[in-house]
Amino acid sequence: MLTPEQIFKRARENQARVGIGLGENTGKVRSNARSAEGRGYAKVSTFRSPEEMVSALASGSIDAAVRGDLSANSTMAAIKGQFSLDHLLRAALMQPKGGRMFFLAPVGVDEGWEVEDKMEFIRLSSRLFSSLDLRMEVGVLSGGRLGDMGRNAIVDRTIRDAMELEERGRREGYSVQHCQILIEEAVRRKNLILAPDGITGNLIFRTMHLVDGCVSMGAPILNLERVFVDTSRAKKCYVDSIALASALSG
Image (tube, rainbow, N blue to C red; front, side, top):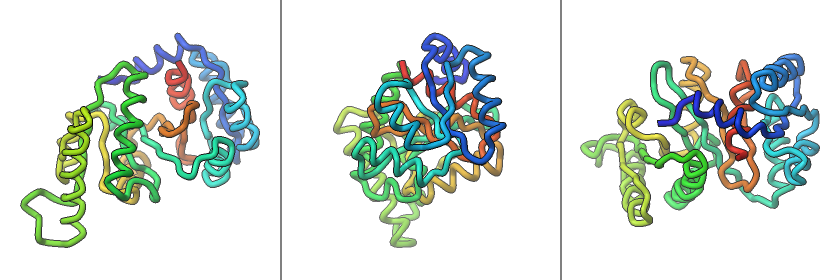
């Protein structure tokens, strides 16, 4: 089971060079950067431009990057342009109050709409879990219980997709289970939760993090060879995001 303490320990061991973006709230970001350095998580540099930070990441001038409070659109565009990617896939690291940590995907509204898209999440996430020395246990959510089949065409499609994903994932050697709509059970047993689509995943993330105060260290980009941790501008503190970036850079 992954814990914050494990991430902080890895970060201190790696002492990576981490860049973080400066947007509107420069005071908060600079303070967080100093705090992360003071705790020994990383050597932190700040960047006012997404293009400058992404270029530094690509060149190896920094080992990892955190979006901080830079604009999401301009930062994601800079990453796509620099690394010649047509899409980005992210998994948010979540820790409910009193609960165990898990990764949630998809969290971008345009991500994960087809079975093959979610298979890509599983394949890429396996590398992330390997880097953390963890066995990946995937819980696939759908729009209802099996007994709800026939009530609504959209619900039926999510259930069929989840069942297909379970079958295909297991065929490729991954531990995948269709958890139906029972997210409350899935988060207690699985460490990668796959929502039915990007809108649902984004709503789960916002409800847990921004409404209920669930801790989210950030969302690593999975289909990027370098370490980039995406963050929300609404996040109160980026110290743990810097630690996550440093921990993954090893």
